Structure formats: structure tokens, C-alpha cells
Length: 232
Image (cartoon, rainbow, N blue to C red; front, side, top):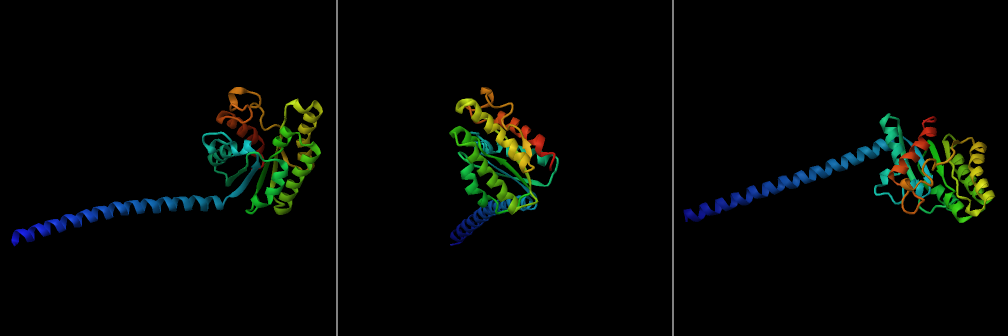
């Protein structure tokens, strides 16, 4: 009887300590989960308290084809901002395939949160499709007007684009001039050519010859940063 009682006690203690061990492990896991959630919440709260820089554009802004979305130039600009402790948070609202007409329809949705700086990169897909320069101009002006009306104090940046003369020399020339004219008319900070130093260079573009590689995106970030840092 004593032997049986001892066996039961030993078995009970084994089960008890095993349960405590599992509880400890489970507790550690739960603590880790809470810590991760807390860190995420803290990061979100910090971002919410910073001024917003909204990048609104095409796949060039979205970073199409990159292995890591953080390699897109808006995200690289965030790194530059963080390095010098400026109180700004970048919002990347780039969308692959976006045209100026589609952007005009989408802009209201992305302006739900207050912004301090608006960076507009649209028009490239219009040029590739041969959309009339006058139509693209109207659409871009509509987007600019929407931002101005919603957040009149926001500073604005326009990224210029150029296209090959496939559609004719005049079209290519008018397309290029459109961006500068819009920037001047609306008193926007102007980046003359977003793809300066990247466009047409195979080593800096993906296999499609259109979208920059990670190295190409670094150059885009420099092209924008030169102008953007002046207004931060």
C-alpha cells in the first residue's frame, strides 16, 4: 500500500512540475506576443504623431518587381529622414498601372489622413499609352486642386517624367514640358526627371527595361531627396 502511495505521489509531482514547465513556456510565449504587440503599437503611435509625406504615384513609386518593398525610393527617403531625426512619416501610395485618370479617381480616398507634404509622380503610364497631353494635364491639375482644397497648407512636389520619341518628337517634347508648366503654375517644388541617371541604363533596370532595380531606386531617392530636403 505504501509503495503504491509513493508511486502515486511521484507521478503526481512529475505531472505537476511538467505542467509548471509548460505553463512557464506558454507564459514566455504570451509575454513575447504582448511585447511584439506593444512594440508595434508604439511604432504606430510614433508614426501617427509625425507629419505625413504622401507619395502618390505609379509602379515606380510602389517599387514593382523589387524583392523587398522597403527598397522603393519613398522608403529609402524615410531612412534619410530618420537618419537626421526629422519628424516626418512617409506614406507610400504608389499603385502599379496607375494613370492620371485613375489617380484622379483615387486621390480622395488617400487624403483621409492629414498630410504636410504631397509628392506627385503620375503621367508615365499616360505617355506609354499615348494619352493626349492636354488630357493628362487636366487630370494632374485636378489631383493638385483636390490636395490644395483639402490641405491648403501642404507643400507640394512634382516629379517630372520623359518618354522615348515612339509617339513622335512633338508628343515627347510636349509631354516633358507639361510637368514643368504644372510645377510653375502651381508653385510646386520640381524634380525635373525622376529617372535621371537610371532611365535607359540596363544595369539599373529590371528585365522589362522600365522598372528600376534596388540600385536604381537608390538613385531615384537621391533625385527626389535633393529637392525634398529643401522644404522639410
